[in-house]
Image 1 (tube, chains in turn red, orange):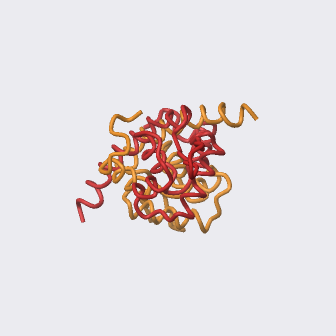
Image 2 (tube, helix red, strand yellow; image 1 turned 120 degrees about the vertical axis):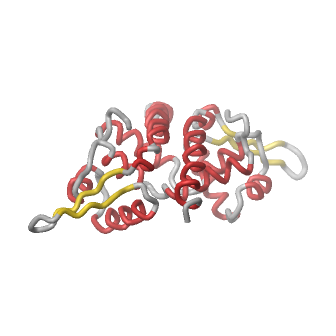
Length: 113
Length: 113
């Protein structure tokens, strides 16, 4: 376990992270974008179960936290693309850790039932 | 970035993890318990801002996911203690990744404002 288990300062940074990533969608959206820039409809298709209203809200929050960038291209009609920023990419370790833990959790809980 | 960015199977395990850990409290409670077993009131004191009602609900959900164990000791009045399970301890990498990312996020967002 963390050698500083329970340390209030470490808890503060975990809290900061959880607040920026709160909800069950943000990391999934970022993971979808980690493969490359995408349009709204593509993201909506890849992140199963998300409604357009929620996706739109989550993208705005991710933009505000500098995790996602929104680009508008001067085509007709205009094309809008979303991409992950460098700061968003820095979540790689978090996503990887969640991925591996999710696998072991499935074995522990779902596999045993 | 993850070499398998956007891969549907990886997204599934990230989703499993996010569902088990949803909300802003569970990881903070587990982090508090990572220092050793604690009583309800101690956890409530260390996890700033959580109400007793929410803490009680979250502990039940953590128990159901085998992340926390509840022990009742035959004292008078009975003592109840919560501790982190081995499966809960396997979240170490997730907490560590969130801790470091939380630090860098604070520099990126809060530090620049």
